[in-house]
Image 1 (cartoon, one colour):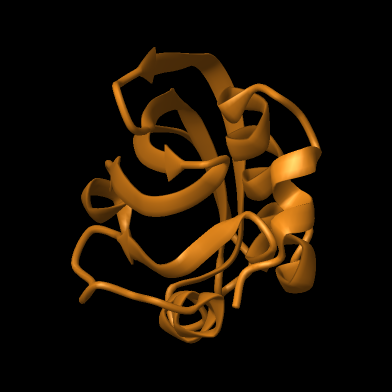
Image 2 (cartoon, helix red, strand yellow):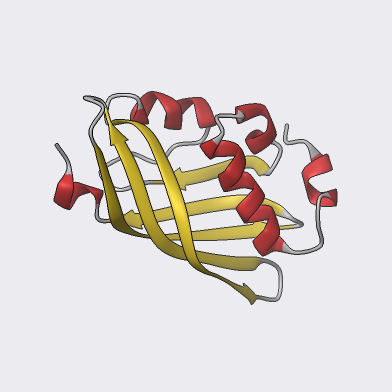
Length: 131
């Protein structure tokens, strides 16, 4: 069950998404988990749908050591019963061999209901530069 404390962090869903992504980047999975609704789905390129952060970590560990996001914009669209948040910018990647690459384009699309993330869709150009 998701922690409802995340809904009290801020009244702004865009800020919730940013806090979720920051917690993931810092590998604070317990904090990140608090932003997810029960049954939330995460869809990444070349990956099956994932429903737990542990699945995401297991999937990523054979691809890279670390990914850091530089945000160009975070936009919010308020719908009748949920909010959409779109983030785009560039990724900096540390590959498994220790080499790095910067300037990889990304777009993340989030759906939030009652302040909790119900869906994350990720698009990026990592496949174009994958080692």
